[in-house]
Length: 432
Image (spheres, rainbow, N blue to C red):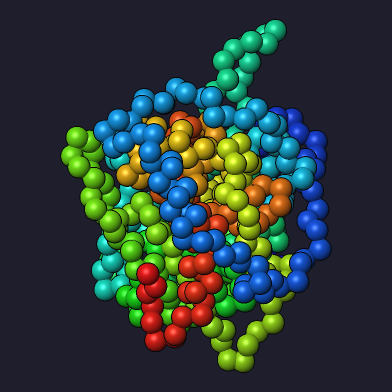
């Protein structure tokens, strides 16, 4: 089974457009992936982390800054580690046909209410979720430079690099497979059905388990028929393989409640800033279908100490292309390279603070880059090793490229929870 990001006609059209701008003669180089690893055993790959160690880490971090004593660190770049982003050894290779200039793609339109507060996941209606708007992307154009050089660099909004076919075989999509009456108005306005069907990302961590964010799934969604798609880079096409969700396991101490802005006191837990983790159990159709391991295979879970500040990590998710002449918009799987931000710096950022940031999450950022709406629940991996370190959870004013960190549920901090959840009695769908 092979999938492609864009059909031949659209791909050729995009390349012609970009070639006209840059005078291109050929595609850029992208690293070939290693041979597929054998499917990992989830029980042997997940390292247990003692609860008291995680608690110690959280309490030690919280001791320096109290709620209401947040330092304005918006312009503090001391955390940044000067290290080049060398794509030649990335675990997730770029598709050179869709990025021949190496400039990547940028966001040109996204839904933002302008209040600077993180988005709260939508409430369900009869189990059907309103996914909101998916960011619209286009090939990035190199800024013009004055004769003789000089000029200021221009930060771009997140768009990242297009992922090559088979580049991220663990990437999963949580979607609704049909049409629903509540989408009628948006469909009439031209929103593609596939965009409304898409809700969240996820990561295949075992043959029948997908790890995602708690805010991405609930029992009502399972009851109305939401499914998981694997092995597809372009979700606007009926590629890859879809699977029935027969049950879920959510962290019982998660709730879709944001803290109010200061000086109002923070909400007591559970809230949306911790325990944003869930497991989705998938089942195949009858009879089971063979899976091509180059297209679909579990990711390895990161083991060890939490990634240090400056560690290069990669988030991935889908963006919607601008319509090209005679072609409707489609979806491209994109990756964005970031650096881990140390917990203390992240806490000191305005409107983050210790009530929102703990040792159970990872912060990551990069000027001009960020994960975006619709990426929630998807993977955050080590850029070079391809091991899963986090789950995309929440962020501020997404897609504006302002360097504010995104927040990711730490896989290491919840390794014991993951192990227990996969062994939980099948009649239960929540675990403390």
